[in-house]
Length: 593
Image 1 (cartoon, rainbow, N blue to C red):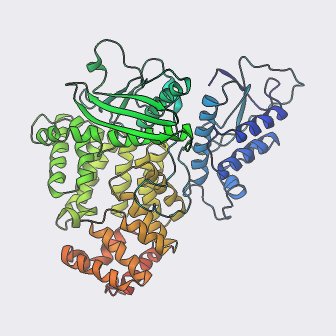
Image 2 (tube, helix red, strand yellow):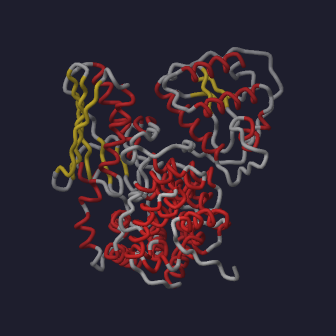
Image 3 (spheres, rainbow, N blue to C red):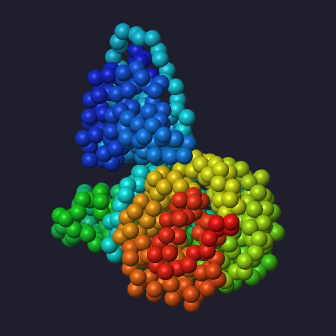
């Protein structure tokens, strides 16, 4: 965005109301303004209210009622719908001015911390003198920036994860840095407590073009920009946009190289990931598209999403390439946090007793070496907690000890870095499974506010909101995490299954449940059993019940306690139990019942 002079809407130097209205119309008419209908309504509402002198009333409650149709019982502390939409609009405006609005004279923003828009002239734009009015500075609202798109009730993808879901927002601003970018807005990053705790670094080199056609060059540049934006959102990846000359090995661990080729209307994008240390190509792929059938911007975004997912997700090429090294390093006394982070995400994908023990040992050794590393303490807390959350999958015995260890580790992490999103996520989960829901949601709110770009924090916070009975706002965040391919395989699909189940959409609940990676996960199978019971599908329910009796008999004798550990509202628990009873499962009565 060009340099701009910030002007209050009532200042003599600011744009006129007529200029502001024309600018809003220009923004809403642009194909480069990516916002849903209710987001557009949000922008029009806050602008019109500000121009009418009612900026002081632009609070979450007012917007929720007037724009989103929420009831009078709307609680902005527990329902983040307004601040989610505000964050989306901020990103959409930012993108508009970077792509289509560079020559515009009037800039409209919604500053972080509230919902009152600011209107600005660019420095090189005319600023006509007008009769001076009394200043009336708007009061800033009570919420911090959030940048996730809202969840709308949707059905599961027909084939597999990600098909039919919304595209990721394009963070083109990241491509404008003149030297290099580290992932300052990346969702989760380790604390700088030790020289070996830095995450893997990926240099995104300039994508070559096979010919000199201008549109081809535009696609190559745009694709690289989109890849940078996508990678910057992912976990534990530092993105280098323009590597410094000279010693490239020191600049980045990996280099992402690519080129764009065209043949008439056919477009092929080629990408490969090279390990700097030995020049090995550890991943490569081609992506084909038809320029007549697909929008160029859509192609760039879709290909960038696939590249980022393939190389930088926890189960992507980078971490897979280091799996053998991690497994060996986990047994050494010189283990450090850098090796433990990919080991942790590799464990989440496998979720076996062996991988659980290896990552636990890895983190314990890392803490012995660097006891002030809050990230290691937070991850260790989650690993301990998994012995309760996933004990039927991991085969861990029933014991109170893991929760005690998880609590102590989370408290230690919080004492070292109380504002770190990764730490707050651990605090949230530990308190949730301890039954202190108020403290859990307070930590989740703080984690989400500290880094709204962190899709894993958003998704996990959404799950805790939903399981606490705040299904609408929680499921919105779960959907965001699912759209951005966050979390272990099937994790957020299982959350979407419960979202559909609790709103009474049994068909969608079953579909989501069946693509939630059921193999080896008894709790997800138990959820599917309840859904099938509610659907009246007795034969299919019998198959699931037989599987559970064979593979998780302890769960079948402890259903009420396990479900109550996760679903906090009695009404939600009873809906779940009703499905099980309909499937022929005996659910024991609560104590005294």
